[in-house]
Length: 263
Image 1 (spheres, one colour):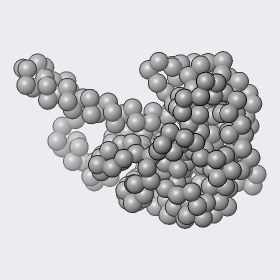
Image 2 (image 1 turned 120 degrees about the vertical axis):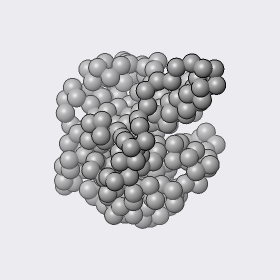
Image 3 (image 1 turned 30 degrees about the vertical axis):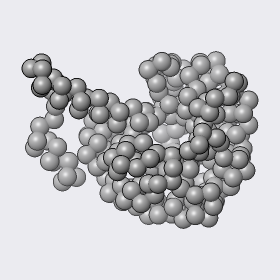
């Protein structure tokens, strides 16, 4: 945590040794409420899910309005909300800070900011660090999860650059840092040991299980776009099952889903 920043209930979920925060990511009101009803105290949003649902590209700064609109809807829910805001939809730190203020007013308690760009490159370290610092100056209580996409941009050895970037974001005031694509246990452990803020790892089917990530010292495990992509797969599979006469698995009833709109 940044010195002087209050330990919010959301921040506290990142400081439970051996018990990482499992953060599922929603893309609309119903998915968020369903996850909260299943017992998740904190819900993130997925930028891919928000973008795809609107027919827009992810990671291209095209969904600012959709992101704020969803935050205003979900921010009234009975759960802690963290918003995936891509790169802040701008390279101007002041504009990113204005977005953070809007999200906090909507009820968000966290924001995820990434340094990856739509063309597959990474933003300069100082540019992303300035965004982190601007957000913390504007909304000190907002938990900033600063993400680097080093493991997704084709580097032969991303570990040194990952540490350099995450240390810079930590120094700029990030409350937590995020390295999606990192799955090698010893590299995860080294990163945990080198940082003084909580490390977030993206769960993947080919990476360590939740229990192993907990043992490695990971503080937060995000599901990213996994749930949205799983929902798409389930929809297509269900339509196919009806077409072929195969059984359809259990699904929520009409009344159950309709009840989500009352929350």
